[in-house]
Length: 245
Ligand code: 6GU
Image (cartoon, rainbow, N blue to C red; front, side, top):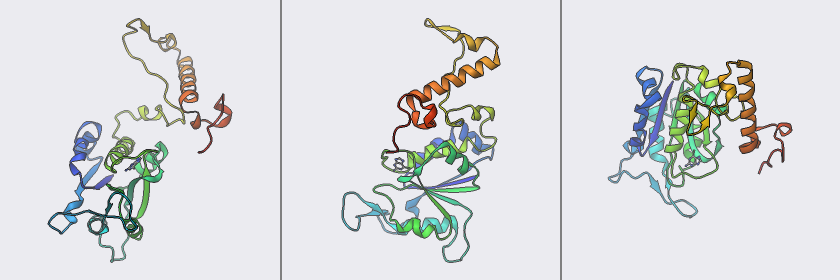
């Protein structure tokens, strides 16, 4: 899978050289291109933003550098050829990023992430790109970040580890939070007693059915307590699901 990132802070993505994703890149499982948006500016100050039409606080990213960036990464816009890339715009106004969406994105051959700063990118950019590639506006959650960079880092980590071969033991992927629609059960390792606290006896019993049942019960209890919205109404217990708003 190939990932391209367009950003005014390319140095942000240096951390993708390390850890699991760094190894995946060296193993050729992930290809990553980080592109400085300012290389597609032509004025002395390498300007990427301007004041919003209609007034209001903050600055909006001008469309011209973005247009040239997408011409360079997707091919020229006037040759009639589409691109197989999916273009993701991180924005708090997008669809929620979930484990299910991460799974879908992990099956893409190529994703281009367009990191906006300030109050966002001139809306004509996404409209124009949608003429030659699939476009998706994605949000990490209901809070505001200063720009898309940290959001894209989170998305790449969630997507990258689902690419076959990136995580050594694929079984470790199926038992985690959100894969079964539940939060994950608690985990323990040695020593058996630590600062007076014991590892639950059932986990040392060797009874695999009992262990699976205990873990499921723990996962269900934790989900009911902190994320009842993840459960169907009849399993949510006291209070049921919070309202949609
Ligand atoms: Cl994807 N971008 C920005 N700027 N803020 C966010 C976000 C994304 N998701 C939540 N807040």
